[in-house]
Image (tube, rainbow, N blue to C red; front, side, top):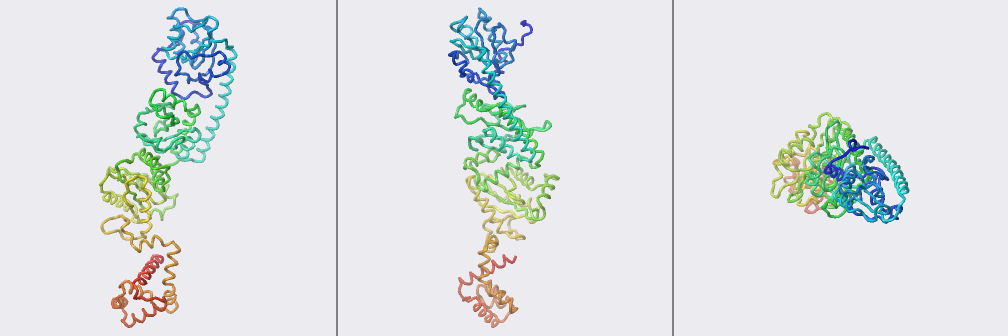
Length: 582
């Protein structure tokens, strides 16, 4: 072929292409140069790597035997070129042009047999290959080139068939996920399981929404996430990017980008060198590209099917894990929260629960979904999140259970939280007058937020419907729990029911059989702290009638009402009875 019809590229462009090719996972069904050199059919020639030792991971897509002076005219890139050296030009300029054309077309490596024309590698050839970064391998013994092509091509074709079967399984798995309406967490988890790599879904502001670690911890995967993610340039298509060689692909629909999903190479020890990055890239397998692209597609469909935004789903999941202490370690919890934008250092934390009791009692889940689909901006989560953004207070907001929202506030030391909680409470009460807002206590470490959530839950459980708000605020806290609210929280415990019945059952039975009202007299007596005159006035009774009734009560209950301890027991039983009847 004439020189005019050759496709040539500048050395700089070729070097850039070669670098990109090395960082991208090899195409399906390929072997590396190092793999081919290790095959017995080539190992018998005692190969010596003269140049390009750092590029032996290049994929070999085919083997080409040539004795032409312009072999690049018949190549497409990725070939392992075998030659006896017969066609090499005599002059150094011609040798450089020969090597430039091979390197420019993306040749994987050049193998020269030092048996016929040469018995030692030509200096000009070694220099030219080293300049272009082209691996040059010398064979010191005779090798049957035809046998090499047969062996390598058979391996490539067999590998391609295996890869096609693996790809088919990947497509079938993601198709099944889509058909059953899997959510984003299920999709990301499946991607991590299929690839064996950590997979992370992030939004457009580089917050890690879902992280499914594989071979590492959440802490290792997400520590410093935003900074690391911003150092990884976006890609229009699936590609290896950034100093850590992440395999990334955008998640979008009809031109609107929603985020991106990243597959992290398996950890290979601390290394910031180019060689370390290349080693990490080699940990990604060819099928990982297919897995990541199908992940992005399944995430797009999941977003269209499930109306809940990814950010809200991420907040809900993180809050539930914190509240229930489902994180693997405190470090994992901190890394995950920080990746969602919540400061974790030099901050205190406060759990807030918002029980939308009116909405929970009047709407079934189907109704709530319809309500949300019609007006997302009216959702409590959306409105409360907006309040917090307006106040400039970082927080996680999410639904912990139907009708119950959880909020985790991140507070600077000595920062007052009451004004913010008061504002949130007023907003929630405007949405649902039956709302109960409860708070736990401040904690200094994120891993202790489960305690704050438990305390807030106890406050909510101890607050009966219609309970008046404290006079100075519109939320409830631990100090509000007295005996009545404590017993209300425990009202379903059979021991409380048994206690009330054991203490007062005989008295109630007597009132029922005889039409008396001794229980009311006992209540007035206990409320008056044993003062009989006050008891008579409250019951509109004479003192003699009060004395007579108290003696009857003592006989029925077999007790001494002058005993302070006994009066305390009966007062607790009466309070429990009121709670149970309410």
